[in-house]
Length: 435
Image (cartoon, helix red, strand yellow):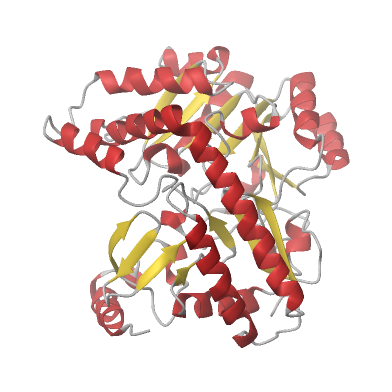
């Protein structure tokens, strides 16, 4: 493929944009971070005219695909009425009513603009409600880039103690964070019993999407729920990715475990900036009586709320078909990739759920936590991702694939053909983590 204009644009961008990109995760691309001009359905087009079947989908938000007509029509109509009021509007009520209807924990909601913000207010609410300060999180779980929770995310940096992920994070952020391995019910039980009077909340991705797309072990979420109830600890689900991907009720409805608080984003706005905190009334009362501060110029802005309303309307009216498509095609793609790898004698593990899954070069048949993820050969997968890109398939270099309702049987068949063609060209790096 020709990337001449992307290379030119990137050189220009580096002169005016720090690093040439506006989010660090976008830098991981070859030969340079690519520039795009248009997205339609399951297709993305770059500035050089290259066409891709897209499994990145804006890093997850585009559950309905690019440029969904219903979403764009709702946004256009709202833009005719104004973009920001610094006041209330009916869409806030309409979307909140829909969320309360579908999400088990959503007795009250508050809107923000990003997942990181929603997590931040969730932690503040939990601390205010309990009068405690410590937060339990899990190795490899990502809850945004803010200082107080950007801890022990990257498997390569894991240690027995919490680890800061960025220069500039003060060491003091580690004082109130307890980090545990995912899927270890025994350690969770021991820790909560030992520090119950200090722990405000346990926060987790109900599926460990950001590192390996690792589902919970049977009974693990139920154990977390029971322990948090026993010790008066707030259970928070980070559903920024799982929300609306696994169903209208998110992972909590999918697995049948209701947290006290949950944060949503990404798919809620179909690509427009929006997030929300949903929770039980007793916890949300701190925000409701204004003793817990939550603010933001763009919170519940009408353009993003119009997109959210249209997205939820689409999922309500056509959800049975949409979710059947997401799970059926996703599982078909997962099986196909695994079968191709087996036929070609490559050590590849594919795991997750249909609408989102992870592909890893590893000798492990299954990855259960972030420490096992260290055996993944990230360099081998990055080479695979680039070779797929050369064949018109766009995937995220860290291994997670997203499906949309716009993907078709033909897209899956074409993708598997290109996976079969790309895999033999990927250098074998040994099946373990490349260091």
